[in-house]
Length: 103
Image (cartoon, rainbow, N blue to C red; front, side):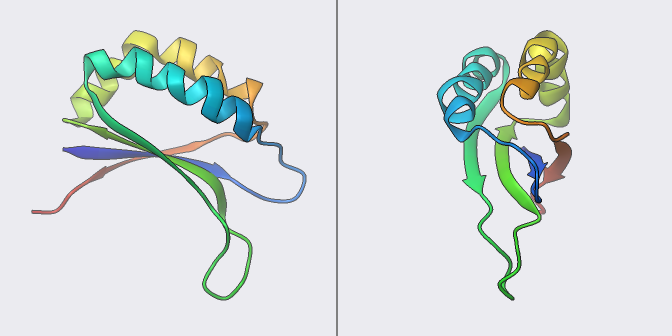
């Protein structure tokens, strides 16, 4: 099992339309990718650091897949549609990281 983290950097002057993201983008992700390997999709919003500073990432999507190959297949199958939707809710480039759960 892997966890794909899609992290949207924050900062002054960045835009992020949470309503669109939660109401359209994430349902699109779930609709397209669940039939081809997405097990779970959660969204978290960054609120700050332990010392009171701003969160480095304003939003993160945490996507659980069976394997890196399953994610790569999902991205190849519907990635153009899903990644093409990103400019509709933000002006920042997300950072995508593949994580594994240690045994």
